[in-house]
Length: 477
Ligand SMILES: Cc1ncc(COP(=O)(O)O)c(C=O)c1O
Image (cartoon, rainbow, N blue to C red; front, side, top):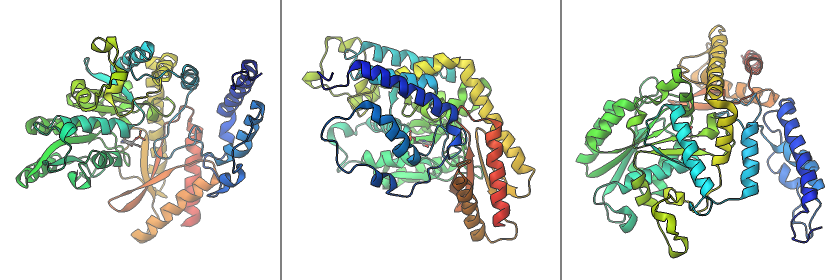
């Protein structure tokens, strides 16, 4: 009975078993579903009740409604033929970790509000650091997303500007700050600038070379020019695995510039960083050990369910200086001897995310994680090989990790036609339900991307994507 208002625990147990059966079936058989949802805008909303239930409903009605109302409106990110954006995975140990986190409902804001949550986070992030080949002494803290990790890193960078005291004084009437990233950097960097009061004018995009890597000479020149114009340069974000093409900026060269100019170096390895669990792919983090901060997203390519991003920093004291704020009601006797992780980010309340990362690392082991990453890189190479052997397609950029950028050639057609036709090829493949991929624009031209990153993706899934692409390109030629 509902003496507490919550569901009776025996009813919970029975329903939880049905939910787990559903999840298991979804993971085992979900690939029969179209990857990309076929609903029209507003369709799901219309089918849902427009007012909340006045009285409680029995739990056993929920799963049927999920199947009937929600599943058709899902684009299946956990599908082995999901190749859009950066494909990711929610694996079984990660799902179990999420279940436990919800059951404990621990808030990892202070050490005292759940010592295990804070201490597991510290330990598991040190495991991850070791697996990535990063140096000892880095302090790691979990954030929800890379956007948040980068915001926190750049806030610390702003805090480190001598004499600025932005935290106390704000920025009005102060020095005009400038920060830098390549013209291929993720929009989260510019957005952090907007939030931090640096403004879009305070963000300068540095040109990239033919392979979309930051031009270090252009960076040094921009800093010189900005100083001469009265700006205060303060931070550079290098990207290890850009969103469009997975280009890897020359981080060591950028670190030289940052050291010379005394600028904070942040490395955005949100996607690429995970590759470093495979020792032969550690080149992705070359030079990153010299950074002041690094972001890696286990929720992108390390088989942990969304959301879980990790911010590493050599300078936790600066991050704490930027974010630490201790009202009386949050004071604890342990604050001098144990970290309160609320001091290293925007949110006070913090989900117990470390559990799912712990479970994924334990279930796969370092070698198991490296093996999956390696397999994804191999699959990308296989796909690329098919394209290269087929005059229907053109591949002009390197694929250092698990993403292949390409276009359908449409020989003899104008540039504008090729762009339009490539988008049409993509729409056709996506509408087939057999694969889902996305596009980008490089120097104004449409390029298609196939991103491999789901733990259940096999060569046969990649082959179907290739076959559908080929059929679509030939049909539209
Ligand atoms: C290189 C890079 N950085 C940052 C982000 C932002 O990630 P998040 O969604 O975790 O904020 C992305 C997202 O794809 C990315 O590709």
